[in-house]
Image (tube, rainbow, N blue to C red; front, side):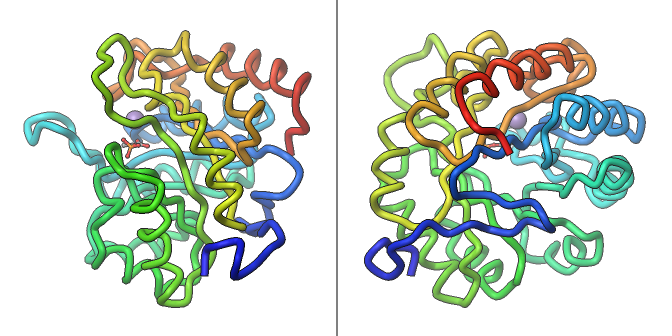
Length: 264
Ligand code: PEP
Ligand code: MN
């Protein structure tokens, strides 16, 4: 269902009125995690002022260590929705547990993100496949293209074909940066699937200074969008501080990208 053989033309996904896919690039930005109402208000303002039309932020965080901040949980979704609504920004947030699906629907989550660690959580994929909500399916950090396409097929087979693929870097022998951004995956995915493909340069590079270069590369290889971490004050971020752009850096990046691509 996700293949070009099934459908030849590019699919544009309507995300609460904002198009994703097609001829222009859509930028999704926001903090790694929801920390407070104030932090989300400042983040939403920065995202809006930079000209981005979708906002990200995690209330449920898949952390490597169980002793680190796990996300604010339910209340985090309220802070997020409150802040984003002021600017009409649809919200993108990660779902890790099928038991939270009703909460996500109730809170008006516009896009459900399936993170790299859950790309092959097949029961989770099947459940989100029953919803009428767009899904961002991140590539598993060690997943092949085939694994990734088949994971999307699990969602699509249940009826939900609003799937957006997100390349976020894969694990290799290299340790200088967080992951290796697989730019090759973009033209390959665009050939294999009719669905939108975006790049997350933040989790790929793991450093804020790498984000602009990786973003330009993403646009150059034909990505339909970018998922960029921003924080009102990156040094104080509770999670992924090294890779967050500050509001000024986001604004500059958006301006630079507009010079080389059509940004929606
Ligand atoms: C995230 O987007 O905050 C995240 C945890 O991403 P990933 O699943 O790509 O690590
Ligand atoms: Mn993060």
